[in-house]
Length: 317
Image (cartoon, one colour):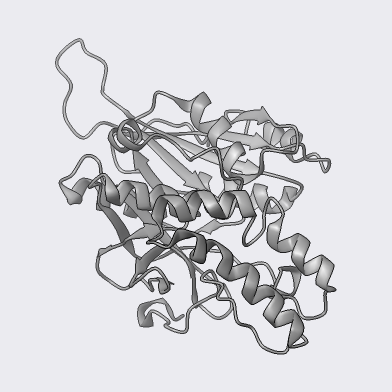
């Protein structure tokens, strides 16, 4: 079974014409987690597609030294593996795959640490078809495989200070923005908003894309249920880690994959924060040093990507 297998069209084609198949380009990027990446692709291979769709995978291997790219080529020969130089990170790697995929009917963002649940892709496409808006972006939520708590998905923005991940239920739910782990972006939305902003490397790129969609009047819908499983990186390995030195925590905060790289944070604030923008830009750095003065005993900064307390009842085993 290949990842690019065509399914049958939903409408009979005119006599002598080829069946119309809608092209879903799966955009992935990876770096040095071969078995995790392969597990994600295996879960993708097992997906049931609605009639009239096909998948093709474009994976950016951003300079892996563990043979990830070669392993993908060997097990999934239909996948297109692109080569990065190790400095693309999630945003640059995704955009390399996105640019190589154009034109496509849909662009399917899939983090390589996600293991899709059965029916995930069909659910995403069904929600899109039922939305009635050809521009509609559809998000799938992920949960921790042990606790079943929602980890990523659609996000609700109560205010600039209050952004939370939405726990899925049995209904389609509107979102204000999104996490980029499982997302379907139709060509019509891409033509309006474009891809990810190259000013970002990792943390802000998906949320910024979602906010730009909403500003353009493009709906973002959260599909019912958890469509995949993944784990968050341990909090101790981030700038919130209490056992790390002040210098280590600062480097993790302002680095390319950090919580608040200054230039990227300013771009995000300038685009989306209310005035006075400079105040919002300065706040996380002031809180960081306040935490340091308190001996890192109190966390003053807020990491919106931690799992939420709400657990969707329908997701319990």
